[in-house]
Image (cartoon, rainbow, N blue to C red; front, top):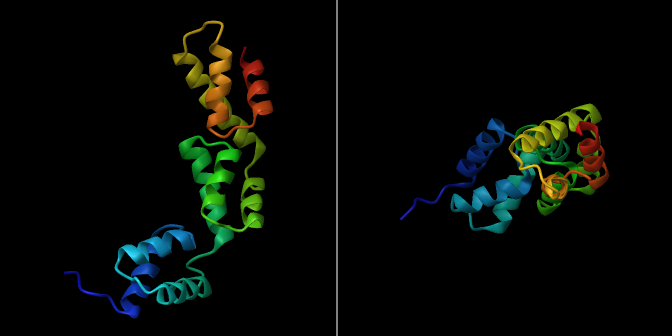
Length: 153
């Protein structure tokens, strides 16, 4: 049987977890539960302490999440927005994070994905539709996808 951790041990563990990388309250709440903290009130107190000491900051988390998902996963703004909403983050912070993405950088990622997909795609009458579907599923806006496809043809 696992040894139950004290409030101080859980707080120290959560601080260490948040110090290593950006996390939102929902992620930390899940971690605390996984570490054996079943008392909801205690988890909420730990989250509040982390927020008070700036270990958790929703606007900073949203900006980092949007940046990383765009650059490393190749996600568009729509998918990033949906995933942040699933984490129950404030709409203002989500919108601010999406606005912080530079349009040039966004278009560069879109074109990079488009070009790599074009290289592996069989060129037939349905190629354009498959590209559009692929990129919109990645979260890129339809109008922007169509414009990017036209620019490379």
